[in-house]
Length: 129
Image (cartoon, rainbow, N blue to C red; front, top):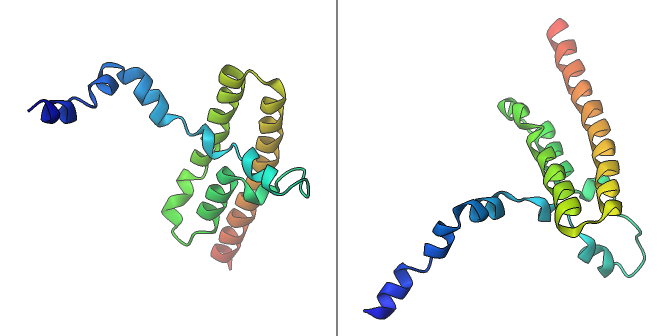
């Protein structure tokens, strides 16, 4: 009977701290941090290319996907950068990490605008012909 009560009440702490639990569940910043994998390269790579960034992989998949209704979600993966930047400043308190994230966002956004404008141009060109 006590064991059953213990099993049923396991999640009560999470429910009582619902605000913190929701914040932890919605924090996707760890999808950007990949320094562990950079260390596995043993100095052969200084920085990962943009093609290995999770937000860019997701955004590129949406752009290259055949399903056109997904195009409206193309900016949602960019929120990973927002979470990572918030984590860098408020949790780690490291400005250099924030600067690195900001530089990657600028590069990723430039690539995104280029690919999106190319897709739109190709679509309009096909409609015009």
